[in-house]
Structure formats: C-alpha cells, structure tokens
Length: 53
Image (cartoon, rainbow, N blue to C red):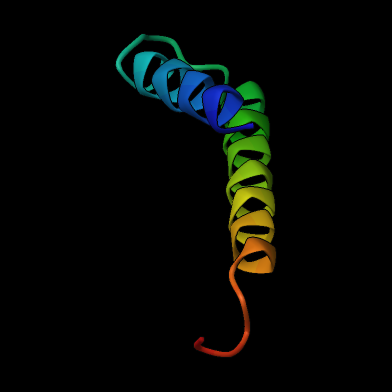
C-alpha cells in the first residue's frame, strides 16, 4: 500500500506540472491517494499497542 501511495504521489506531482490537466482524473487520483493514506494510518495504529508497556 505504501508503494502504491508513493506512486500516486509521483503521478499527481507530474500531472500538476503538465498542461492541460485532466481535472476529473486529477481529483480521482488525489482521492485515491487520500484513501490509501487513511488506510495506511489505520493499519499502523492497529499494530501499536493501546497501552504503554
């Protein structure tokens, strides 16, 4: 998942500097990247213990 997030990050950066930008695709990619980041955060927090040892 982290690799896919990084790939989307790179693609979004590339698209931002390319004219003309397909706004719909740009928004979809950003939304997908956000969903992946949230999923990664959720998985990481589930791996951490809730109480200190």
